[in-house]
Image (cartoon, rainbow, N blue to C red; front, side, top):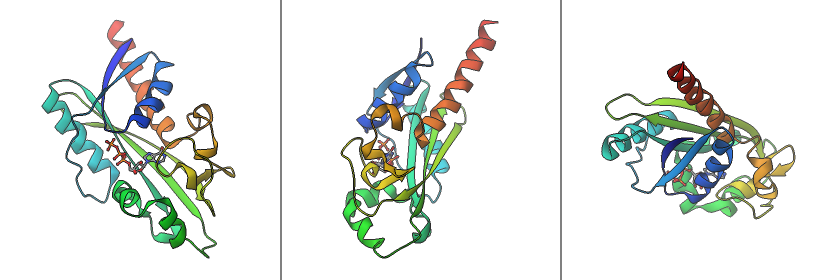
Length: 189
Ligand code: ITT
């Protein structure tokens, strides 16, 4: 098994990454050292900076995950500010902002940053189209899961199994795992 250090303070992300990556021969170990989250307008820049910073600090290869929910009717808000907005407004206030809005389309995006000390980060992105529900539904998962729906069901209503087969994180981690495993095969041959 290939082991990767995942630098995040979010235990739910670890649980999802373990679920997805263990099936692909990759073990995940959490490191809580944190990294400076740039107030940037692109998830890619935040993930690249975080991965490079953490790899150099820990002296080992690492992965980080920067995710955000982009609501079309709100011009992509909260997007790269999703963590701050979740902490300050939360789901109920977002639903209030969306009251009376008929365009409920939203996209959840995940950027995985992977870095070896002294090198540039590599990025793997995944996204899933969805809709902001009219009310919060379901208590599974975390964060925006109760208000982000795919195919009529919120992530909060889905079990781990269902979310982890179609989520933004699943799609990004799948690309990451394929790339890691290809590298490994090339190395063995
Ligand atoms: P780290 O930066 O320590 O990894 P975080 O929770 O701050 O953890 P993000 O900045 O990537 O992570 O997350 C932005 C916000 O979006 C935050 O409030 C998360 O709870 C939320 N979020 C991220 N992924 C999510 C998912 O799969 N489902 C629901 N909410 C999610």
